[in-house]
Length: 412
Length: 142
Ligand SMILES: Cc1ncc(COP(=O)(O)O)c(C=O)c1O
Image (cartoon, rainbow over all chains, first blue to last red; front, side):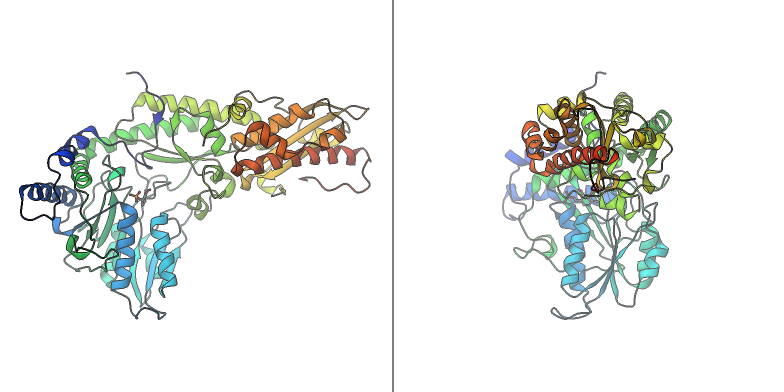
């Protein structure tokens, strides 16, 4: 097999749509193009059949009932609907008052969870942002310690998008069920890659997104539990009352059909794929750690998604490292790769230290990642890190035996 | 982010990378001025060393840089520009000239500022070592 450049190692950002998914979608653009809400002609029925079949496929992937799936535009919307929708529905006090209820989440969640929570603070809710421990794993005990009599919602992601760490989700779900608190999980990085069962895992609300599971962009789903307990949400979008009133708007039929197919393929191929990607990641990590000194894996070593690694290459700045491996598409937690000039808040929240956050690289493998690609990446990263270390004043100081954290730097 | 060709060229073939000795050695050499600016937690550290002749001309310059491609290019370019210049001439180099030469986008202007600072700090260090400043402005001390 010949390598195709650039090599894609950023599957946590998005995935290529599987050609089998595209094929399933195509008829819904030009032939079965009806509005799934049209009840009185064939076009509508065909579209509705496509949507309902996809709902079954999506539900199966997470062990849910098809009636419990709400279509959205992606995880951002699913998270917003889950968090704001539950908060508004279960609020302890009316709008305009304070003390409307307490919500628990964590500081290293995705912005699509943090920002809805922050907005709720402005609306009179209290939010606890748990500080993750250095290994990044949120445990049942941490959530238990933060629970209050007025806690109405807990939102803890299943696996973290930057470091791949896996939280104690089923344990936290069990705790929430014991205490009668609604439990939402942003499972964007988890579902489709790892086995999921909303009953066994005690989930009430679960968000996931098409484009992270080899489906199309702009389509997602929210699981909303219907029994034990029956979870109700206040809609964000008002309109035609689609999706049991929880999400109005003509359905994105093509996207939904693709989403369903993507779910089915993930379910079929998950077992072998997990194992294959785990081996590739192990190769990547062990080779880089043996060839280079001063390399650190961020987040809990074992409780991590099998296809993702976040590594810090000490004394080397992340953006310059990305520049040295131009033919490998991946991402860095360095400030320079963001508009904010702040290094990754996720790594910062673990106490990784700003300097190592600036030196971090996230590599995430996927369906078409091959051993040759991984070997190419290992060589490329090794070469780039060595090139940059010959230029790095910090590397020199380190080699002279000087602890750079003890130096008084002149910050600007 | 797309880099200008000049930035890429400096990144691939940095000019004058290196040092005139370990940090301890250069600290005691009177013909060498050292400027270290920035901080690891900010994501960039530049180290510029200048070797100054008896007649006050920068004979040679070496840099090391921990930072993004634009930071590396800015410090690499700075060494090229100051070589052969008198201390006063080198003091006249402005960050805006670096921005222009490397076509740095607005978010990278701080890299050029850092390069200008490193020149000033290295010159101040040289002057201080040689008693040319009454009370030298403190450079990036360790
Ligand atoms: C954990 C997590 N949550 C939410 C999102 C947002 O998903 P979407 O782009 O589908 O809105 C992402 C993807 O960027 C993610 O990784």
